[in-house]
Structures are given as C-alpha cells and as structure tokens.
Image 1 (cartoon, helix red, strand yellow):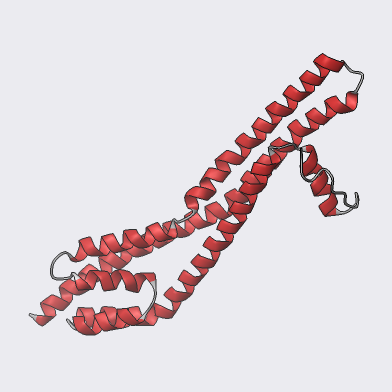
Image 2 (cartoon, rainbow, N blue to C red):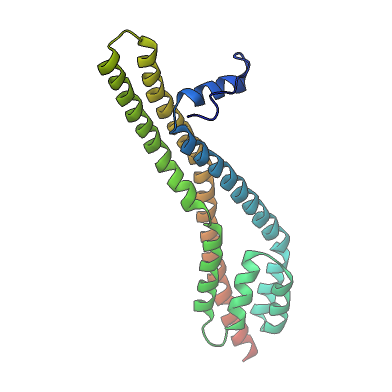
Length: 222
C-alpha cells in the first residue's frame, strides 16, 4: 500500500500535483525518490567542496609564487615552511614532494596528486550510478504497469477502463520520472567531472614546474 495514498492535497497546487503523480506511479517511485534525494545531496556536497577548493587555491596563489622563487634559489627549508601554512591542494602536494625531494621527488608529488584527485572524485561514482539506474527503474515501472493493465484486462475485460488506464499511467509516469532524475543528475555530474579534469591538468603542470624549480635550486646551491 502506498503510504501517500491516504494524504490529500489541493489538486491545483504544484505540490499536490506532484504527490498525485507519485501516487499513480506505483512502488517504483520510491527508489526513484531515494535516487533523487541522494543525487541532490551529493551534488550540493561536491559543489560546495569544489567551491572551497577554488577559494583555497586563490588564496594560496601568491604563496605558490614565493615557493617557486625559493625553490629556484635553493631555499628549500623556506619553501617547506611556506607550503605548510597554506591549506590548499597544491600546497599539500608540494609539501609531500618536498619532504621526499632528495629521494623520489616526482614519485612523491605524483602520489600526493593522485590522493587529491581521488578526494575530488569522491561521490562521482554515486552520481554516475544514479544516471544509469534511474532510467532502468523507470523502465521497470513501465513493465510492471503494463503487466498490471493486462492482468486487469484478462480478469475483468474492459468493464473497468479506469483500472486499466491506471496501469498505463503508472507505466508512463515511472518512465518520465526515471528520465527526469537521470537528466537532472547528469548536469551536476558533468560539471564535477569537468572540474576534476581541470584540476588534474593543474596538478600535472604543478608537478612539472616543481621538478624544474628543484633542479634549478640544486644547481644554484652547487
């Protein structure tokens, strides 16, 4: 039994219309609702996280310039002190690399960058799954709605056409709902994936720049 079936709303209200469609969509609407809530929560969390990352990088821009100047002149201790003060992803990567600069500079920089990229990708698999899962749930609702309509036709004929149309409505509503959830999830997913790709390129450039600066610093010190 649909828990919303006993609840009534003004038929001309937007919320009332949405609840009416939800009721007519059948039980498949519940997993679709869960998918939509998870997608909204994950999208908001990721967007806020990316906004925080962008602000941190903007605040650390001048610090990074000072760090690379220090590295190029062989002042490695000063560079380590500077990156330790700035809470940005780039500075965390540099801090990890500089601690290992005499052993495996590029490997440690790459490993630190991969950890940061992994942190940025957190939750994207969930959004990607919802993009694929929601239309499949909609198709499942379509199948169950059509099956219900044929069952009613086989038992009662066309004496109760409203019962038959209810199954058809369920089939159409779940398909539409699944597509809506998938499309609305695709937009923030593409934004997040694009952000991760940009940051990956930024980290690659950071690693290259750091290696060159450290080589110059060692040559300067020699």
